[in-house]
Image (cartoon, rainbow, N blue to C red):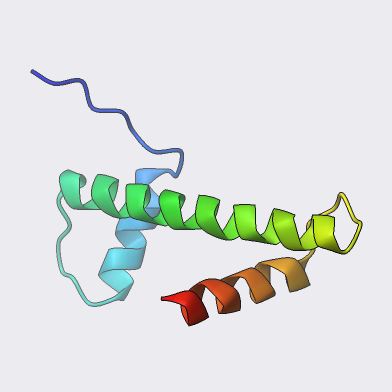
Length: 77
């Protein structure tokens, strides 16, 4: 049996996101998988936002950095 590493995000809110999108029921595996995807995307956005903050000579990541990072990532896809 393989050891499964759980993501940082709690499963209950992730499962609520899936139900909010229209699912009646959500398997635990589906919640875990979406949590992993969200975590990976969050790390990608955060890294880009950190780069933007550093470029602006700041150590604090601001909302504007996150918004711009998301826009830049979407544009590059």
